[in-house]
Image 1 (cartoon, rainbow, N blue to C red):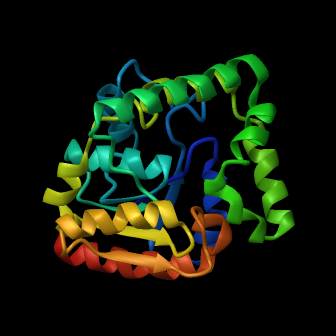
Image 2: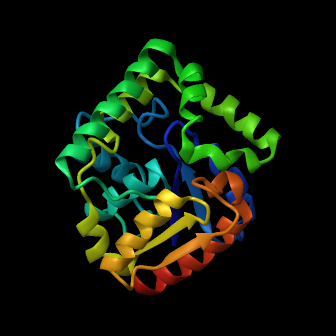
Length: 245
């Protein structure tokens, strides 16, 4: 069973380094670049086209693990029936309310404009100040510094295009997909990630059999804050999906 790992927005596949190191060697897992984060993975004009291109790039993969932005793409792959199952870390399934979608689209457009005008380094400085990422100071400084260097090499216009086409404001509402395909989905969320823990609980209220694993001692990004605990959780989730999907 092949497992692909999709990183978050303005991250690189190297953000999975510590998680991969903690996974058992017999698990066939590889980190994959997400659209807009490398010249080999451009953003197509629409959400569906980009998801189809990503599906072609990971052909042969059975389970996709996605973190945040990558989790939304993984859910898109599940909706397109391109994969058998998915593990979603800190996922938002899409906005159902038109007003909320419009507000988020405007916010994504403002971040994209900042990328194009100021470049990646200035964007990251502002982006990381969002409350969602406040707990990341718990991670070792050396790991955070290395990630910052890796992320700083990302091309700002490509990242902006990813926000334009794949941002939460542009993403279709895939809540029904997650509910209807709950047997082949698995949610993971940081124990201190209040916003996304609430999202996960709301989804589980609609689909009680949808499993949620909580990673204690982590906020929104357990790949950074608790990679060993996340790896152990992934092993269990992959084993469950391999039996059901």
